[in-house]
Image 1 (cartoon, rainbow, N blue to C red):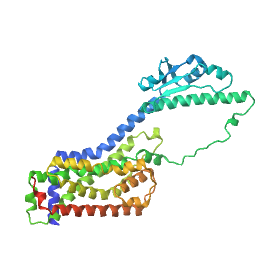
Image 2: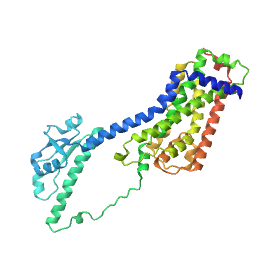
Image 3: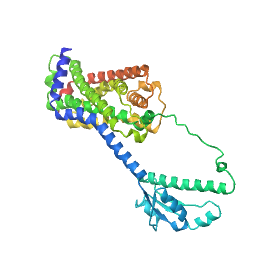
Image 4: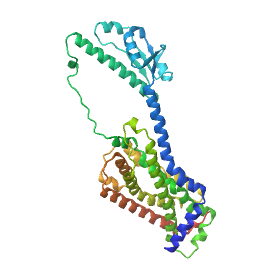
Length: 391
């Protein structure tokens, strides 16, 4: 055990001098997710709110055929622009988000009490078109409903006749549960933080030392290989754990800068969230450290190990993609699957749902069991004499 502690403190001390390791473990990993999240949310939400409140500029073709309609749309916030010759080409070339066309027969159909048609041209594949198209559609529907009610009243009928069934929607979501839906990618950020926190250290302690030819003298000492491996894994886990703690704290601070009042959400990233997230993520600290060391052991240079681990970095995102494509109701067995357990568990906590002690224990047990298997595989590779050879 003394040998393992010696290796542990040696690697910690040496890598504290390495700026690349420190920036990855204590800066890039913990702060990348929170900073990106706050910036994206502030920019996208601010932009959408400004677009929703600003006057809506839309080219209108045939405005002279329905002056009353155009005037009503103006009062609702629409600013008619000059008509265009080709509405289809206009939206496809992104010269306008939407084009409103009023056919010549609009006035005649209106006078006869028949449905009067208007045409709205847009390209749904353009992301910027959603807000203006939704606003124009809402304006036209409001105008239509108002005059439909007036026509019924003029004939001595109640407007309720055209609504034989009323749907009363009762949304049972809470501000916190809506936040969980919005931040479904948050567990991946924590996993990525753990990965980045120990990646450069794992590369340097195996492939790096192999390339510098310092691994062979270390193995020449009368110390069991598994003790050397234990010290190295302990150092990697320490950096990853510190990175995770910093990320949890950074997200707690970032939650205070989220525009929760505008979104009608509650970002509760306090002590309960931090504690549960830490417990759920702990097995991954050991598992990813063992996997990174195992993969790096097959590389003969630092650069080659970086290539291998960049491919391994894609592994944690698989559960996130699966759950986004095929949504599944959280079940107890999911907590026995590493990576999937963290994705489900952290999302549930973020939604304000209860994650019981049984689920947490199952996650810890299954994750640590997987980490133990990975450590055994790494220890088996460490027994090979080829590991100390760089050429």
